[in-house]
Amino acid sequence: MTRKIAVINQKGGVGKTTTTANLGYMLAQKGYKVTLIDLDPQGSLTISLGVNWQEHLGIEDLLLHDDVLENVIVEGRKNLRLIPCGNNLGQAEHIDKSSSSMIARKLKDVISQLDDDYVLIDCPPSSGFLIVCALYSIDEVLIPISSDYLTLHGLSHLLGTLKGFEQRLKHEIKKWFVVTRFHPRRRLSQDVKEKLISYFPDQVLKTSIRESTPLAESPSFGLTVEEHQKGCNGAIDYRDLAEDFCIGRTC
Image (cartoon, rainbow, N blue to C red; front, side, top):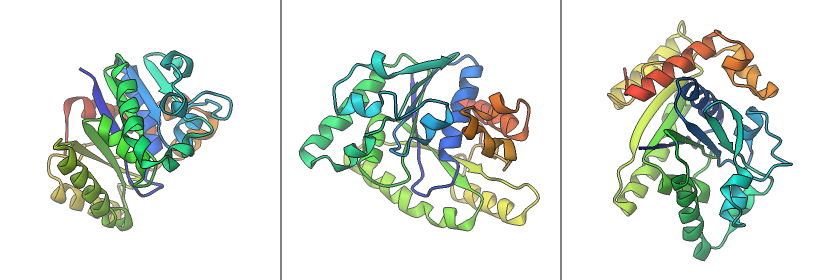
């Protein structure tokens, strides 16, 4: 059975795209079949994986123009595929309400065509229509939390959005958290992680993602951190996180 996960946080700069790319890659390295979907009009996931988003068909061609999956999906790494963001995904944020439910159903249908172990959706840092589409199509969310108080403070709004969605659809979404941009020797990082664990017991994945230069550099080369610098802290952390996520290992 396919695990369908939206990687989501309404705050930017928390490692959402980095987590989608590197967790997906590490799951693929473990032998799982994985598809990543770039649902952020900025196209950061697409760029991070080395695909020219201005020259390639994207998810919007499936949602808005009835193109077929085979024309859009990119296969360049073993066990790992990408449905990229194209040049015009932002148009989906401005469609009229009468078309919105149709677009949401189309995304759900696209995902149903994927014969994968994992589907991870990189969502935009907003609370707009594309987020609703993603939530309509998944069963789990992974929420990256950078180790600073502002990110923790803004979490209540995101959880309110999720709760409202669950109530409307009468569908419970499993929630996972991962601490990113972590500094093991900084008291602030430790405090944020401890507070998160106290708020959400059994939902914070055990491995935290340490801040590292290779992790920050790798998107500029169109590579995951493991491809960019094998065995660095970022690669080790995402490999461990993939194991946590597979077996539900939490703090």
